[in-house]
Length: 291
Image (cartoon, rainbow, N blue to C red; front, side, top):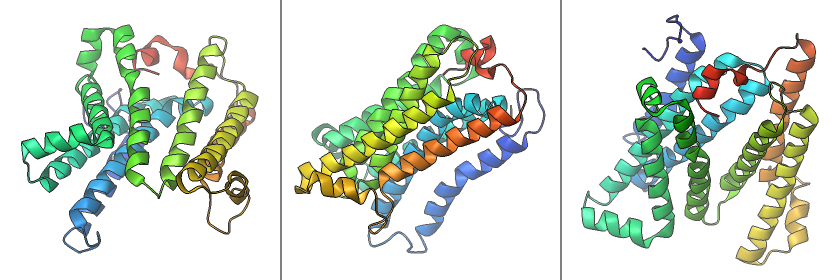
């Protein structure tokens, strides 16, 4: 089946647009290399860019399930596999460029992965995404059975956590993006817990979704304060106060509040402006495709 065709065999504008958009960051990075737009160490920057977009696409794939249910947009599920495979494609290029940077010397590559803990973590995440990509086809779903396939693909939550840790350790002093990603991850995991607790066939109450947004925001702000206190001995209260000022830029906690709050607001508008509908995520077909 072509990526721009839906399960019914019809052309899908949503799938077509998403499919094309997934190539853009990679094409831009590749085009930037000969044009000297990647700085003084272009190969290193290209490695970082492909790794960064791997994590972004991985998180986008994880956001699709809550967005689909909260917005009552069942067709959104059609692009999740595509986005997940894009994350694998980008991490494959990321690792290939890393090997090229090591001149494809197997001993040096293995040594770096073993001796540098953040590379070890990244390699485990690569292995996990490889397993998910290899079993992402409809044929593998039938061979494994819906329940076993779903359990296997839940390792994506652990892979996402490893990706955040890898990104955080590699970023060193510039931890702005890893911190807000950690906050989004907390919200995503919290939503999944709430969704399991919700009565069958009923969506998660919006007040719980909003409460999870506030919790993720607060934890992100406190996490940033603790990190800078431990790393550079910055006063805890001063870092926390910085979250209420834009003088030094938008802090990670505001990114978390804005992103999760926007989803909550859109869900509220959707829920109260249209006819009430049964949750699309509770039927057997969608359950077989994973949570």
